[in-house]
Amino acid sequence: MNPEQPGAPEPQGEERGRPIGRRVLLGTLGLGALGVVTAPTLQRGLESFLAGASDKDPTGLTDLLPNGGGFRYYSVTASVPRKSATDYRLTVDGLVDRPHSYTLADLRALPQTRLVRDVQCVTGWRVPGTPFEGVRLSRLLDAAGVRPGAGAVRFTCFDGAYSESLTLDQARRSDVLVALRMQDEDLGHAHGGPARLYVAPMYFYKSAKWLSGITVTRDVRPGYWEERGYDVDAWVGRSNGRDDDPTS
Image (cartoon, rainbow, N blue to C red; front, side, top):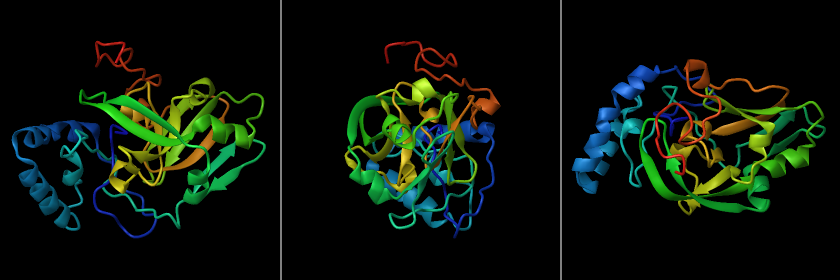
């Protein structure tokens, strides 16, 4: 998502992907049962087959399969470019005194925070006890010097389509990270690497993948899925009517 959302085939350069409707995404979730009833070897073989065909079929089917660890992958575009440690940049701008552009090395050099929480997707799947590590978003905001009158933070992604927003108070929570690692490994492309947003207490669509921009704004601007009917405040158990357990 953005439900947990990575891309399918990768084009060259910063090509903007073709949006995929949510009905199409949800209609393909039946593929998730495949990972439950098949052995891991068969699952990996099917994933490899689809990945090998991805250049000819930019539908992102590989990304709709359940992955080891329970994650399911979605993308709102047909393709997402890759970023390496050498060409990745994360900009912090907007209503700040000190705009800045971070390399991946810059982010790794900052103090890191490790959180272990359940990941909950609004479509119903959950991955318990998932470790994330990264830089607290509040640290980047403090370094930039948020100006008076600011009230929100907008996030943009290098897939060319996805966006998210938090209030400034939400963004300053200690359990909101610019994540660089997940499950004790560097964040891979499929999980939104090199860096993604991680908003631990909210449904996973708020944790924008392939993060490239952090812009401090006056007011909250609805993100990609909020413009399509999802809650702006996506607290697990208290929004969208998808989860009955407010303690999860």
